[in-house]
Image 1 (tube, helix red, strand yellow):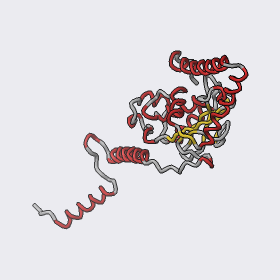
Image 2 (spheres, one colour):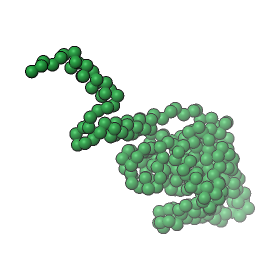
Image 3 (spheres, helix red, strand yellow):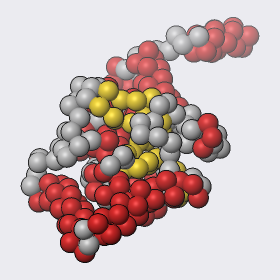
Image 4 (cartoon, helix red, strand yellow):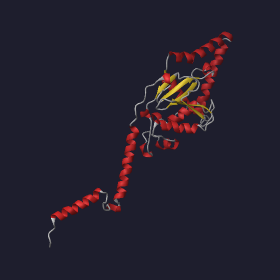
Length: 270
């Protein structure tokens, strides 16, 4: 038998290595071709890259009230007349990552960088790490994977806000059933902020009311001075019945939103 030529064998091995390097591999186990294996690897690599980019949140700019820039914040300002009678009532908005304010202020209209009813009086910056940005159904970080997907997910903060903007550009504004709080709640549900899909008018208002901070001392005066003036004039002219009537108005207003939100499903729902 003729012995094997060593240089020839090395050359053969080198040719095979070159083929493998160029992707010309033989069929693997189960009839899988190299192309299929490479495609699966590419999908896995892309998914891994998306997930990695997903959690690399770039730093935000500083909050700048003078320029009306509040990155990833909830913002609040008093409403004319309504806040004079019930100072806990106001107009709210939510801000993009660049600080631009978005607020639902009329039927089929969402303001951008033009906060309705005046300058921001209170704000609360939210933590993007408490949001769920799933690139696919299996990548949810919240406990509401199916519900979140059905409602509508996003891969970034701004993406979630833009989706809500598109939805509310076809909504009819109503102070009692579909207002600015509804828009903010929709954004927070789309973000699944804090791992919750239960954001509504009441807990959005409570969040900014109890955790928000004032922009400056003038904001406090602007928010409460009209209420104090109305209260004093009413008591001087009408007496204690005015005070009772004012508190009754506030109680009925708050009671409507609580009743419509928690007691009758769908009554207050955009």
